Amino acid sequence: MAARVDRTDLKILRLLQNNGRLSNAELAETVAISPATCHRRTQRLFEEGFIATVRAMVAPKKVAKGTLVMVGVVLDRSTPESFATFEQAIAKLKFVLDCHLVAGDFDYFLKIRVGDMEDFNRIHGEQLIALPGVRQTRTFFVMKEVVDNAPLEF
Image (cartoon, rainbow, N blue to C red; front, side, top):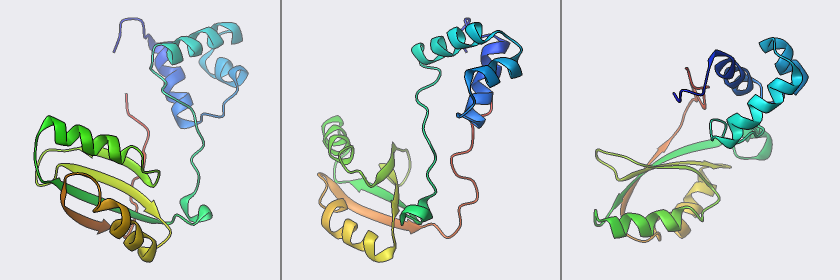
C-alpha cells in the first residue's frame, strides 16, 4: 500500500466497500473524524485510484439475467497482435461482464450473464465464435454461485 494510506483511510475503504451508500456524515461518525476531514480523505482516495467507482449491485434474476456462464476461449495464435485484436472486440460486447487473460489451457476466461441457455446459445453462435482469432470455446454453466464479487480483504 502507498505510504499515504493510513489506518483511517483503510477503515474508510473497508466501510465503503461493504456499504457504498453510507453518507459522509455516517462514514465520518463511524471512523471518528469530522465530516469535512472525511470528505477530503474520501475525495483523495477517489483521485488517487484507491476507489475506482461506486455502483449498485443489481440482482441478476430481477432483470432476467439469472444464468451465469463462464467461457474459456482459445485463440488460434498467441501473439500480442492477436491478443490486442481479441481484446478490442470483446470490450464492445455488453453481455461480457469480465474478460481475463489467463495462463493454462485457455487464453481468456469470460464471465457472461444471460437470461437462459437458449439466450446463451444465440449469443455464442452469433457473436462469441465470430470474434477475431477464436479457435475454440469451452462453456461452463454455473449451477450455484457460492461466492460472487466478495469484498477485498486488506
